[in-house]
Amino acid sequence: MRLAWLWSLGGIAGAVLGLVLSLWPGGAPLPVHVWDKLQHVVGYFLLVFWYVGIYPRGRDPLIAGAALGFGILIEGLQALTPTRSAEFGDVLAEVVGIAVAIGLARAGLGGWALRVERLLGLAPR
Image (cartoon, rainbow, N blue to C red; front, side, top):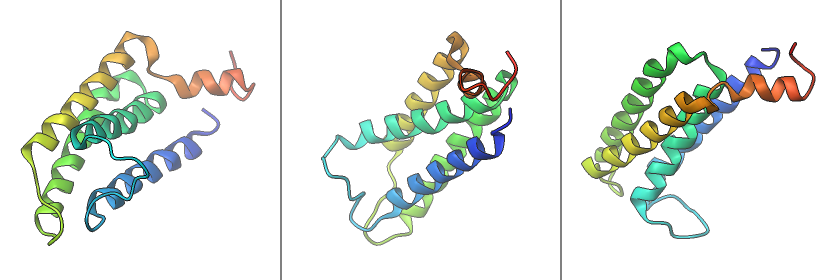
C-alpha cells in the first residue's frame, strides 16, 4: 500500500483518543450519553476493524490480542485513577467489539484500506 504510513497513523490516533477518553476524569466528554458498555463495544470494534483493514489477514490474532491487552491495560489504569474504576464488564464488552470486527474481516471486509487505495487509483488493480 502506498499510504500505509497514513493508515497506521490513523490507527495510532484512534488508540490514543481511546486512551484519553477512557482516562478522562469523570468520563468521556461526549455530546450524547450512550450506554457505557455500548461505547466499549463500538470503540473496540472501530479500533480492530481499522487495523484488520490495513494489515494482512494472518495478523488478525495479533491484532485481536493487542486490542484485548490494550483494553485490560486501560482498565488497570482506570483502577489507579480517583475518578474512574475498572470493570470486568467493560473488558467483556471490548471482547464483543473485537470479535465482531474480526468476524466481519473474515467475512470479506478485511483489507479495506488496499481497496480504498485502488478506488483512488493509488494502488495497482
